[in-house]
Length: 160
Image (cartoon, rainbow, N blue to C red; front, side, top):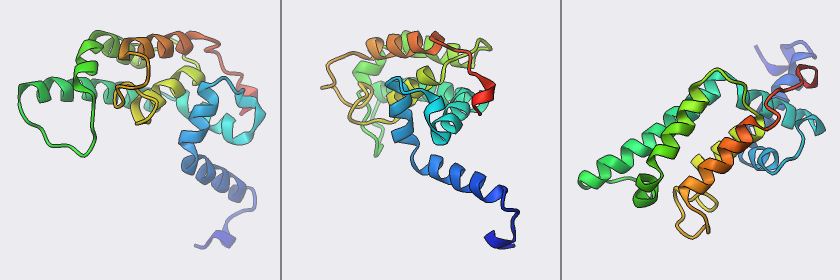
């Protein structure tokens, strides 16, 4: 089946999903900085994706994986293409694991907070997990994300 065989109502949904998938980092930064998700269909879709249980669980698992990696690396040599600031992760261990628990929980979370977690996990320039020159610690970053997780955690379903 080709794209032209699809119902016309499905094509914009596909295009929007593709656009959001390709622009996730930029959309996450916009949401984390406080841009309202109601301002564009792409932001609304990304906000909905961020608060989904599967996204939250994946982020929680990634936080735990980074802590486990830092602990294993302290015990010996591990070769990895990703440079993680192991000492910073070990110093923020409890905060990172607490954030993972919060994401795994059932309490509502805000897209802004989950976007901040995504940046923490993926942005090599802005995240103290990867860059020791960000000017803030892993604990600072975790507290910021945790605070944003609860801020305006209810999403207006009509916006989607």
